Length: 180
Image (cartoon, rainbow, N blue to C red):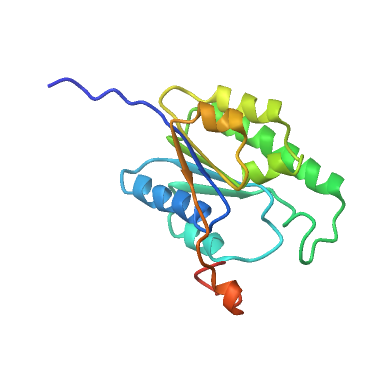
């Protein structure tokens, strides 16, 4: 019997619908089941306390979560300058490159990196350098709305989450354990 050749995939979860981060975390749970090492870096998020922060702790030591964002940019309670957000994103790019090049992880999830690119916090050149640094057998998942055309073309798998109906449209606010 021949050994199965491991091929790392570039996976993108994008679109205006909910579920991009959730899909990547589902993949994370699956990978832990095979004793993989996973690194998650969250861009943009950071100022709120949300469920995955505690949930991921239960997946240690296989999962390392790095929240580098300074919060949601320009919305709700954001009182930080754009430059503060940009510097956090630059730190995230450096961390992503370090983690990818360490070759320690079978799965790396860059949560909301597409949003960081769309907002101008991360350049397309930085995005390309991250993707190009990936090892051939390493799986890289990038989430967030408004994925670039370059990333969509480069990816092995792209799923677009499409909003059809949302509880907020009925006056229902975000729910603990479901939305955050």
